[in-house]
Amino acid sequence: MNSLLKAVQANSTRMLAELLNGPTSAGEVQGALFYACQEGLADCARCLLQQGAADPNTRNVSGNTPLYLAVKEGHTDVVAALCEAGAKVDATVGNNTALLAAAKWGRDDCMEILLERGCSINVADSTASTALILAVRNKNYVAIGNLIRGGCELDCRDNQGRTALHYACHTAVAVDQLLRAGASVNVRDDQGCTPLLMAASEGLERVVHSLCQCPGIDVNIPNLCVQKTPLHLLAYKGHLRCVQDLIVAGADTNLLDSESRSPLWYAVANGHRDITALLLRANGHVDTNQCPEKHPAHACPVKLAIEKGRVDILKLFILSGYDNKHIREYLASPAVQLLFADNQVTHWLHHAQE
Image (cartoon, helix red, strand yellow):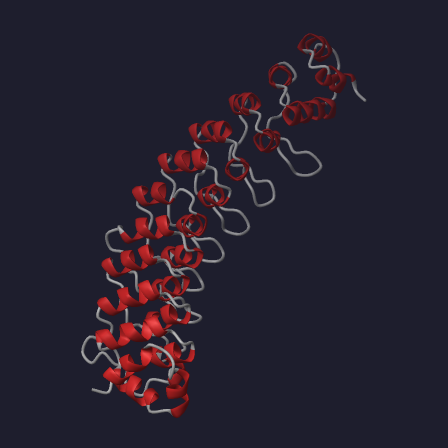
């Protein structure tokens, strides 16, 4: 072990200065600098940079720069010393930069220094993730604020087509921050999912509410694979407040997914009476109050309610006048009559024939 490294390990700037006044090799100086940066020994790092003429942009055998190591470990004073000595703030280590490391690991103070030094704020890693996307994914709220104030692009997409707002809405992280900053709410990822669809898939009521308040939001955008809208998802999950928010924001209650099923069908499937009532009040198929003509039987809400014995929901259908045609048809079946022979719904079903 060389003497310079021993001096740094002892964190002795006096010993280090004495050794630097004598003969040293570049390799010894650089090795000592990497150790100081790794361990957060700022005074030793400054001594090596100033008196020992250590190169702040050198790389070790792993390809790391002193700055990258210092940021990754969160050694703010060392980061400041390296930047003062001329470290290149945008130097890449693999597919990463010091800023990306700061965003990923939550090194907020280090990030502030890098931003003050003018680092490239929209640089991306091998997955096309920017510092903002990484900060959101890793729930680093301070970093998110720093990046937004620093003027980062809000709608950069990663290699899945997702923006920071997609990830925010998936985990309920910093959604309001991004919305206030002007993040696009209708952008679709490679699967056709909007941030609202991400929030709906997780049943995040507060996030859905915030998104529905955004001017210009399109709440009827479906995903690509099965053509489900947020209303399909939330009617199935049973989130009454979310369904209310969607309807107020302009949700079309009659849109069908790839299986020809409406949000009403999904509410019936899980027995959500309150949501069924809300959807009926929202005037689903207001012109005829029937299933669409030539609608497949597997997608008929009335047929589903009868199959599942949803008596309370059948009463709602009859009271609202929803799809009397199918109610009468199914009532004519002896099997259905037998199913409800001893149930209070029998006289309700007879009313549907009147």
